[in-house]
Amino acid sequence: MIRFLVAVLSLSLVACSSESQTTQIAEARNLLLITIDTLRSDRVGAYGDANASTPAMDRLAARGARFTNAFAVTPITLPSHASILTGRYPAGHAARHNGMRIDLAVPTLAESLSRSGFATGAFVAAFPLDRRFGLIKGFQTYNDAMPRSADGRTANERPGRLVVDDALAWLQRNRGDRFFLWVHLFEPHAPYADGAAGRTTAQRYAHEVSEADRQAGRLIDALGDAVTSTLVVVVADHGEAFGEHGEIAHSIFVYDTTIRIPMIFAGPGIPARVVEAPVSQIDIAPTMMGLLGAGPFDADGIDLLPAMRGDTPPQRTLYAESFAPLLDFGWSPLRAVRRDGWKYIAAPKPELYRVSDDHGESQNVIEAQKARVSEMRAEVERFSGDTLPADRNIDPAAAARLQALGYVSGSRTGTSRPDPKDKRELAARIARVTSGEVQGAALERVLREILAEDPQNPLANLRLGYVLSDSNRCAEAEPRFRAAIDAKYPSADAHLGLAGCQAQRREFNAAAATLKDADTVEPGNPVVLANLGLVLSDAGRHDAAIAPLQRALTIDPDLHQARFGLAIALATEGRRQEAAAEAEELLHRLPPGAPQRGEVQRLLKELR
Image (cartoon, rainbow, N blue to C red; front, side, top):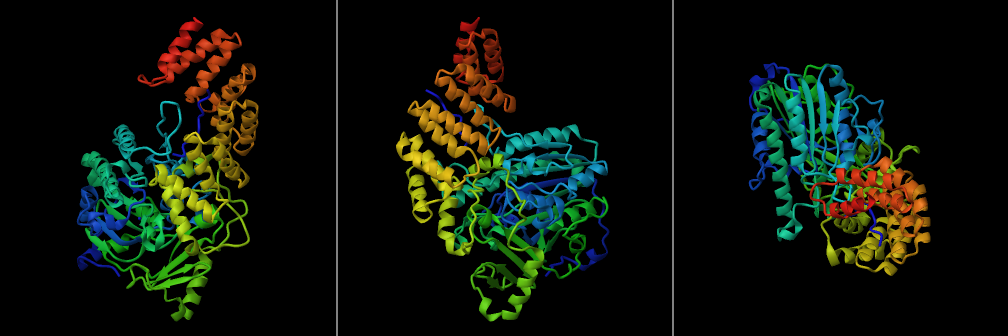
């Protein structure tokens, strides 16, 4: 029986003293940038959480500048990081959602520092920051390799300790050089810690925040004597919602729950200071360039050095957006501007909050502030319209891996754009699924609730299909897979699920046809090619199986089951020497304790 290689489904100025206005800021020699995914500022000790276990960030904040009103440009990983590294708003770097490549013509921090003689290294913990999306630009080392399971499947994230292990090895190799090291930690992104341990969501999230802090501490401690000459910046890409405004997780709404972030600068000449002025992720790159003495940087943001000296930053408008509602569901995008203690959210049902007093954004005063609304609506449009360029594109080859992390449910278009607020219950259900926080029987129930409200939802149909097929209910699963295919699900996962059910019934010709269709949806996907070869082999067409299996292994040499299938097909066709070579190569690639080693060794013994 064929064993399918299915893709994984499974963020006013308070001056401590006036004498700092004349303090000269010393230039830093090195830069360590630590970005922590999905970190709420109010879950960090230095930001007021007395129960938080965040000693590394707390110590850093105590000796540096802590920004209490720092905001993300979007509650989405890739575009936020692109803004951190370019100093541009999303419209300026083009990555408006996960899976959309940055405009490679836009200057990056790493590019500028590399040209200035810095050794540049990046170590990222999750697929949304994969090199294919453009953040590799300027980095001499870009470590984005994710671990593999025993059957060769690539994970979509990796623990922070593994990321830091690799970063510390790079740091050791580059001691003595000026360096820029960027390390991204995926903790505390959902699913949080061990859901089976009986702890609450808040407790598990706090555990992951603590783990991120522990890994950040390892990086800072590893600087040793170089800490006195190194600028250390810790910032989140965005926050997280736990039911505020009806939202679960992040990416849809632009309330402060998911866009207020911790941001800390510490290093040579930076005084201990709390800065209350509103600042943005777009300010990080120009500020770091100034602190490094690396010259001006073309950015939308400003240099925050004066604020760290005790000066009052200029009055300005800050912008944030989320195009996830549009790109994932066909709903209206959300765009927001903040100025003079007010925040306006452009939506079919617009919102206005006096955030200087209403920190929870609970009182929409849109009807009482007509003139202000008109002004702020015009400001939103100056930053971005509510549509995207026609050539915008989410890489279909990346879509399934992003979906497995809770992003990109499958773009749908239409003339009607509902306000996301009117879909918040549906969005919350979807987030519970994509976050991985719902498992077992509860998962099937939530998926059916989503489909009762939104029958064509491609992600819900796909995931319900896998829930059903994994419990040997392929007759119920197949219509779900077909519904996802009909809704133009942007990857081959639905085809893989359907073909798996067809193969289970030994309808190998139908399964092969489904997989050939999958190859048109996601050309060159090695998992599709491997499964096609395995189906053909199970149908007794070993000669036809060899080419797709070889092609799959050319693209991804670590698809172990495909290599075993290739060895079998070659042996059956009388090509025993080639079959033995593939079996030997598979033994070389399998981990020492892999359970498949015995089966491969038996095959090799028969071939010799």
